[in-house]
Image 1 (tube, rainbow, N blue to C red):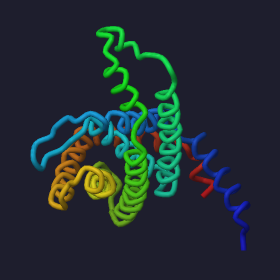
Image 2: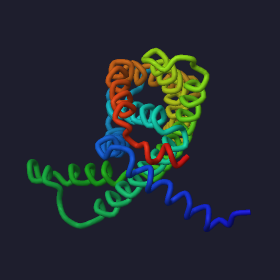
Image 3: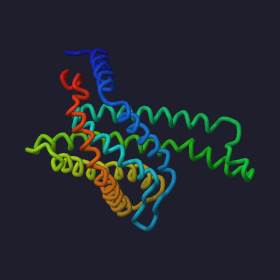
Image 4: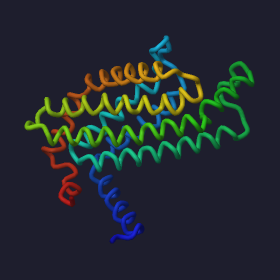
Length: 243
């Protein structure tokens, strides 16, 4: 039976090999989308009765498209590992922002009107609330696992390997995982701390998932072409052969 230390060492080596095989630009877009989605979630985009979208929505579909192309080329386990790595980087960024928000000094915007409330608002925005960071981290962890497992399972069940198969596995896994992401966040944050009803939680989670899916649908052709280019050029073959 393997010891915990040995398992951690093997998984760390596997992650390093994986990161060497995935194009750096893909990793960059993935990590940035996670960080930006978390930061811009502080600003609402739409807020009308049962329709609530924050500006993080603009970046969240990018995360799922990146997960889908990684899963298609390197498998579910690879997608989950990269997702957890991106989440870890995001937590480091949030921690850095929280510390720097406590540092003395004024934001540049303060000097426009010299209003202390502006400085306090920016500190609160970038500093973040612990329950928002916790809720978003939990939601992203669960949804990334759901997305990877669904995407991989549907892909194995498909007989073809063309765009239709890529679209089906991506669209189905995305809308379900996005709903899970929205539902977990709305339950742990919006319902508990902001007093949302279960109707608001369910309806907003569903509407958000549909909106995020539509964004991915628009760019799924691009994602498919990226994966096909990787396959034609044997990108990441070293990791695939190691499995």
